[in-house]
Amino acid sequence: MLIQWFLNNRCDPRGLHLTFVTYPTQYRWEGSEKCWYGRQQKMDVVGRMIAAHPSSGECFYMRLLLNIVAGAKSFEDIRTVNGIIYDTYKEACFQRGLLESDNEWNIALEEAATFANAAHLRDLFITLLIFCEVSNPAELWERHWENFSDDVEYKRRKVLNLPNLKITNADKQMLTLIEINNLLKQHGKNITEFPGFPILDPTKMSAFANHLLLEEMMYDCNSLKLEASQRIGSLNHMQRVIFEKVVQDVASNNGGLYFVYGHGGTGKTYLWSTIISKLRREGKIVLHVASSGLASLLVEGGRTVHSRFKIPIDIDEFSCCNIKKNTHFAELICKTNIVVWDEAPMNHRYVFEAVDRTFRDILSKRNPNAASLPFGGMTMLLGGDFRQTLPVVPKMGREATVNASVTKSHL
Image 1 (cartoon, rainbow, N blue to C red):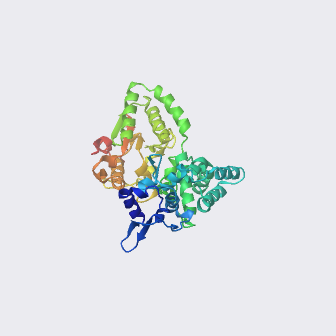
Image 2 (image 1 turned 180 degrees about the vertical axis):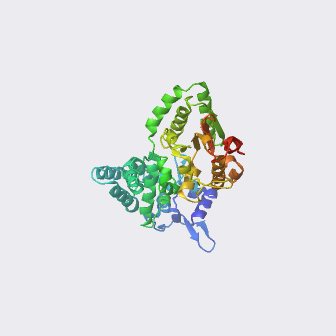
Image 3 (image 1 turned 45 degrees about the horizontal axis):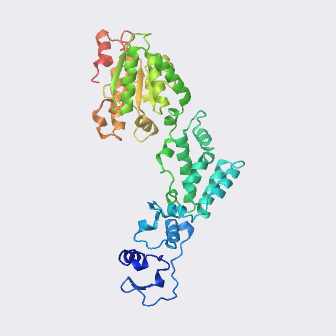
């Protein structure tokens, strides 16, 4: 009947002043032919529509509009107000003044925020969404989501035993939205039934279950920003060339293998710290490793390469790291943007080749071409001084030591 009403209005201008409800006063519906016919004489007829509960969503709002919109020729005409076609019937109702303001719900949430905790506020928000006629749920969410997410960071710190964990506002918002969606599911609803909310990202919940990944995300971005700006200004010409090249490579996500060769005291560690501060404050994940424990302590978050990548002690040319796919460690490697490897000449070339094979295997999950790229396409920044200690090869001479160095690797 509705479709035929549209079609009738296109070819019969006599009924353009009638709404869908008042149309039967001048037209009759022929059920067998499924068509509207004009009445010969005006009759006192009452039109009716199927009832729609406010919780039925767009059906309810379309029903409201059909009571006041006259002469519609399409669904778009029903949603048109002052020449503007709105995306939803609810928006059109709001523009026509058919819906009340959400001011009373804003006042209720603001008042509750003075004495209730975040969990209670989320429950109240769910109650408003389900049982009250909230005109603009998305606007209500935008105004109060910070109060709803007040306990998110604390709960993640407690569960993961990471007292210094920092969560960005965007992640807080998404984690809170996931919790609200879980509460809605208990009532048979879903967040997608309420237009205007951000799109859910379920990977956020799994990401915040990975403590290895979170350890690399908990740095203070404000202090890193200040540190990076101070360090960048004091770089010399060669340091700045390396810095810009590496940062550009990470930003473009092209992958690259670099080696910074410099004598002791020429500022390699200072360069590492500058690059790492710059990238970490942008939210990038940087793994800093070193061949020795002493060198790994020179940069915050540093680890020895054997500890970080689980490299076997007894290693040969066919060895791989003890990292399995679909684990938290593998997820960390997939999310890593760059690896900074200090004092690289001290490691046996088999160590680099083992890490290379492992990275190619793990990163092939997200990039099918990773198997043919050095380190699976990961940006690798190596550094050190070949005048210092080279790999120790027990009971062997100079030739074996040189053959064990990274310069003899196929990489």
